Image (cartoon, rainbow, N blue to C red; front, top):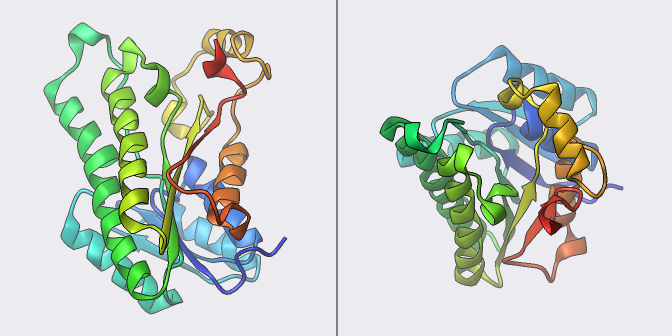
Length: 248
């Protein structure tokens, strides 16, 4: 498939994990990609090198999504290097796992600043550019916890529920020019989740109808679908990629 030939994609938090998988999937399907991290890093450059090896353009871009000024500069730098952005994926996120009675105010604030405020700043900036240029697609990365909640990760779950709501609001605001959807994966073995025990994984598999964990590539495939013209009549939706975990 070559669904993104001639298009430019920007994926926040794409120097590793799910973001990296999304960046590579879109590049495999023809997109030039802005690889983002909060700071300049060898990891972002490594992903950009992988993308260039696929014959696509790639540009590492650094910036803090919590700052509107830095978001504007990120967007400017990416478009200067690669051209007008047609696909924007809000993947950057943070999670602090701690018992409900021990949740720190600083962790609560940081979680919402990155996962909600940062996502909103990026979406608004990207949508303005896309609207001025005739259209585009925004994909937000939510979570199964946005549907079911978890007292051991309450701020994260609450922030992802907000992402699902924001996705609907943005879809209404920017239709029909810009489509806005979300993907909600379940537990995925990335660096952010390296602390998870084998026992947790076994219990997760047992509770999942598809009997395995979510792979980063599963989420990347869902993003590619929603970002493509195959989903041209879909907006405001959140696609669960959880192997049926939330069916229980």
